[in-house]
Image (cartoon, rainbow, N blue to C red; front, side):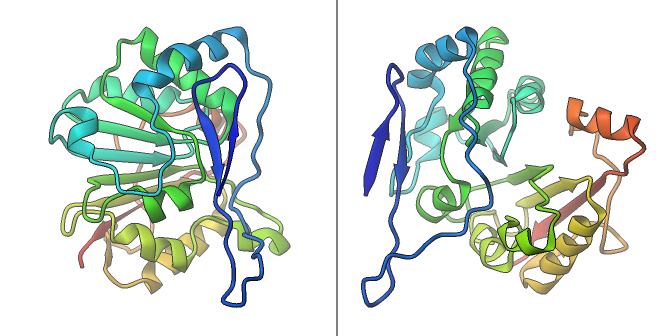
Length: 249
């Protein structure tokens, strides 16, 4: 295992090497391209100030949500929260729930922490790491009330479809993390091809029920804020597809 510590920040990036049975190093296909970006002074200050209180370092052992939040409230986890505006808004409107956000865009982490701090949010934690590895090693089975994935990278070129995060292998992993009969997976995209592919993948994996009566899409739920990205898509005349699935087994 290699660790890379960021200068001046109390957090780290951990890369887990993977090997085949014969010891050959495997090149892992990721569903994202890490974009460090340039941190503003406010974002950097927010990370330095808030990470010890609101950040969760990557580790190869299960987290204890009760210990982290100090309660047994439902846990909602979001993959790829961008700049964090909608995630912070949801946490602010639902103090009776616990929220966890995973993001690999450094300025987004800083922006989210700054928003949460300025809004006096106490029911939100952030993880800066690859979501697939977080689910493999950190998220306990049967522990999530809801998993959110809003506007994941569509990797619209056919040769890049292998990078899409919604694949059978990952769905089978996060299914076990949702609470049986209660836990839901809510995914949103503005790419029709990706929406159709998501429905196809989710219908293939057993143990899920599409909450849509037509087994495809649902209207935008009131508890999902409209992001700036989504508002811009509407202005351009683009359609938005919401899909929600409940774990049944």
